[in-house]
Image 1: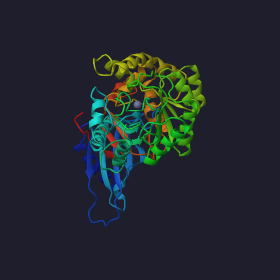
Image 2: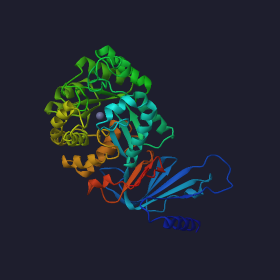
Image 3: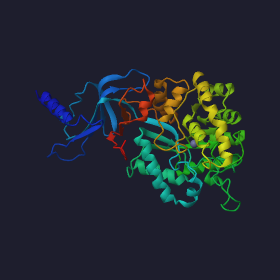
Image 4: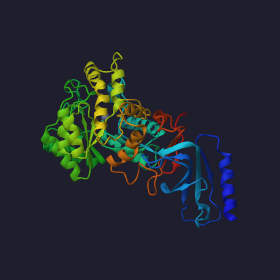
Length: 458
Ligand SMILES: [Zn+2]
């Protein structure tokens, strides 16, 4: 009888708030109980739940999140009898009974300290670190609002800024996605990661290994060690030329084999993975042979690259959205420097073809967009491009959840909605395994069991 009353109260509560797409109600703790700290429950009632992408979704499920961690996933909408706990619990209830719920998305390649447009080079000269950090928190929030509860930042011109933004989010000072950050990318002098390229001689001090610009194995080791000393979670190396740097140096291999090997062995010895930016095939293959954990872009990969990817357990992060974005912007007069527009026109037509080849061969593909090249918050546009390149919607969702969590080494914490994992989930109105563009219209975001209202109207 007691249980019936509790259920009736619970449903009465839900009935009050079932009209909005993402509705949250809170029942205050029972008064008169002495401290210890109460347990915080979030009960998420899901019309359809895709708990483990790749497995069938289930109807009418309740996800129980306790103190930010998934406690259980239950059939039906009743939920557990958490009010019977000895310590008065705090209970949030999120009504997604009309929605399709899936794990929080993961983007393995973003740049939170930049958003590319014609004024970026000038802004970078004028803006202080403090201003840039504030800018980055706004961009970070847009990623979270779009359903990306975890992002990997693969290189900021100012390492300390992105590492501080990561830590401020972790500390709860600002709302944003979980950030895995590389600090400054490791690049050759004048290479893709050297932001002083293209300016007149003498304007800047000579870039150095401490700042991520390194030549020769010894400097490369120092550069890696210094990023890790600053607090980098992962090492990013620019193995080849890049599209958006000012260098007129093509897209071929930039680091020699011994330098790549020095970077990878140093990073691995300090328990950090290595992500290699690579377009040209010689650079892709050299980086995989050196032992990098992922190739970012991979534009000109060939059959040897495919064999290397599979033989060395290396992930491919194709960033199709970046290619599509630079191709469109290259046609806008003055958007890019002439040498950049020329590279953009070369790369874009190759990207879908490269993706199809990699996917069909069974290479592990982790979702990544290079957002910052494209506007923040549009990350989910990558999904439709992946489906255009031959993935099923279900495979694309796995790529942005389970596969991405494995690349980040966070598969025990995120990527599925299962007991013991972080309470990160999102909702959409329709079934994204039928129409992948549903993921471009996220209706609700929950991170660590906390409902995140959108920072601006959806
Ligand atoms: Zn990038």
